[in-house]
Length: 101
Image 1 (tube, one colour):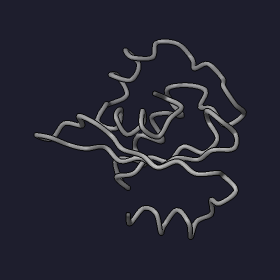
Image 2: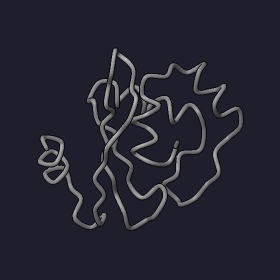
Image 3: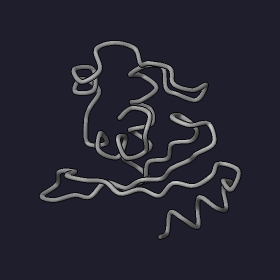
């Protein structure tokens, strides 16, 4: 979950201590963009809480970027949905446009 937008959206209601229990060790490096540890994940989780959207850029596949949102029920994230696209389409304008969808 630490390397996907869906996973990050699902984890976005967790605090740092909860994340440490889920991931007691450093992360497996899948690509050059994969997060390395809890601190990096927690920084992204804090951003996801503010923006209400998770973005993963080349962390699983260097050619794919994904955006995801968590679906809440009774103030808990119970599911997530995402879109995936080729990374060469990605830029700030593209992301902003798709955040509105």
